Image (tube, rainbow, N blue to C red):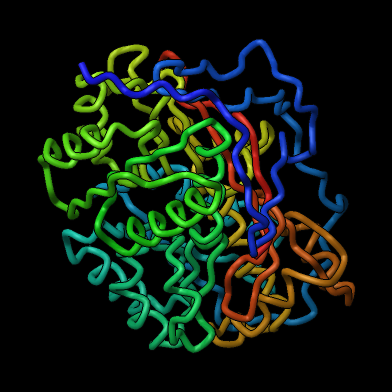
Length: 449
């Protein structure tokens, strides 16, 4: 059993981040008074994270209500949206909530009469992962079907394999989960958009959070792809700016199945905390670490591996481990709507971002009075900012058809796009695993880019 150094919990030296991260107990700025269900401290590792405050179960603000006025412009070509989301591969666990979010958005749009007088059509295709060329085949099929926009992929690495194919065809690529900073400067002809914030934000939040938990040293096990190395870079810079030191950073490649070498090297460095920046490889890595004396309260996960592990590990294996997922917590009313779409849902990661992507595409199509991809893209920024606030298709399209400018704020939080198609403000949720190896909301942090 590896014994890690005792470190007294300390207040982290949080720097004034250029992105302006505002630390909040909850999205609504709730009390910081610890609750009786606060995080357990790992005294042996010097980790004592701030206890979560009650997050409540707030509901989303109601829409405009009443009947939706008919569109004054009709289209001969119905809006057709494709999805390129994972049903196989290392991110397959993210597929169900994302697909449910897409389908819920489509249902609400069509229940309100559709876009420009016609029902919206949706076509789903598997993205797979970077070990296969499923995404390329699926993209070819979607483009051949005449879609105006593609919602996906979830993986930044997968999106890099198809972004030129999609945008080169004059079609919008709209990812609900890509977080690689590389897309901010990609030559995408103005056709790449996303509702998930860049890992510049998630990385800074996670790095600072580990410091607030008292960690002075961190080890990292990192997937060697655009997502993993990009996120690790921002975690490291944030943690070191807060006064900490990264004492080990071990990489592995997609498709690897053995991780003993990486685990041994990280543990040998005796870090206070360990950041796992992986996809479902965490299923193999976590048992290796706990088998060598690492406490779950020393582990910090990320959106790529935040999943329901109740069927993978013995009870208590992850109790007290924490992790980050971009976006605000899914509210109870939204969860109920998603469960009506897919009763088998176990978590809700990126469901809000997927729902928002569909709504924004539909609203931009209405604003453009066109179902052509390039016309829709030209209106996406406008419907996300500076106007009457609204948060679902019926209320927003009612405003548009009455000649109003709209500012769509969705289930994933406020959505205001930059010229590059990135959200300029977002929440990062922090979650904690319970004895059943499922995670629950702990707190949210808000930041602007």
